[in-house]
Length: 487
Image (cartoon, rainbow, N blue to C red; front, side, top):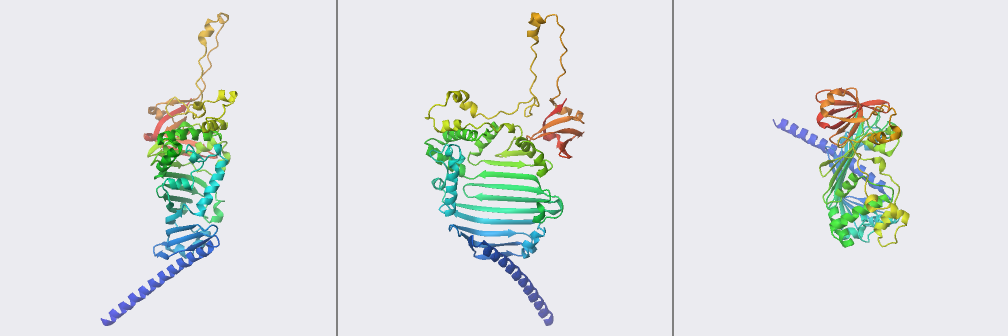
């Protein structure tokens, strides 16, 4: 019995030594990798850290990090840096990536990144921002419009808003779906008392070689792009500060700001449709939240981009949908081709300096603030939300012709047949549309155009030609808001 106890104790000790040795080697590998990164950061920056964190299940990192930029002395403290993946990845991360042997997941997170408003780095960025503003319409950056005498909202403005430093948590995640040939890269940030955001992009590639050297030659295609932002205090502080600078209340400031934004864009030849103006105005409100998703059917690659003839076609191909404060926003009903117009800098100049000399008579006759700053209206349609394919035909002046004595007694030509065009049909007639060309507006505001290839009691399938192939869209009846058929 005594020998059994001794042998068991020896085995336990050996197992503990083996595990301890393996963990020690793992910790040493992590420390060696971190030290190499610190050395590679020189001479651009000096990096110091307090301790190494190495979890055996695949999470490593460092705590109490301080990065000092050697160029200007800016110091950036970071509470912690963490990298998560499978444990074997950290033994040779560079070799695995170069060979295309990506881990299924790889993430990097930084907690409590601090940057003082007094740092030389931010002062340099502020100077660059001021230089850029001098070349903008009116010499004012868009963020500072209607904010009194401010041309940019720099560091001093942020201090008066109550900010002493910038504190941020951020992370980046990579998900690799090797069997499907897809990558998904996502990132999020949380800026204390300012806002937080999220971005995600999904790319597909052809072939099984996922090494960085081969990815650009593997026909990468954008499959999905998602963006979101949530205000967390900046809008309220900016609105109060600028209202004080302008000597008005917040409501008056926002109204004047919206007028100046429209004129500022018009001075550069951009005239936003009314829905976009309303969307931007809503984003200026405290606590606003916006989400945007781009999901081009079949993906968006270089060959598709080359086949598009205009920016408006690209916008339509992106298949955009959005949500503002949790409510769906329709983005596909706008005339994107009408956004670019003739630049009108005199409109902004007049609003910024109402005491200036009157405009020349030929310009004054053309210009009315209500007209210049009004956005293009949505395309009207026979069904709400559906764009009309062609203008309605003008009625013939039949009564005037009959009253004309010179035309009395002459034979009248038969009326020409009405030209084919898209016409609205009731949703109850979906079963009769097989083989017909249709346009379908979904409840999310998307517009699909193609030929109906199948209708069953629950789903309408539309075939659309894309480049040299076709894509079939299955739409549940509950997704469909309105339908037009071409005849």
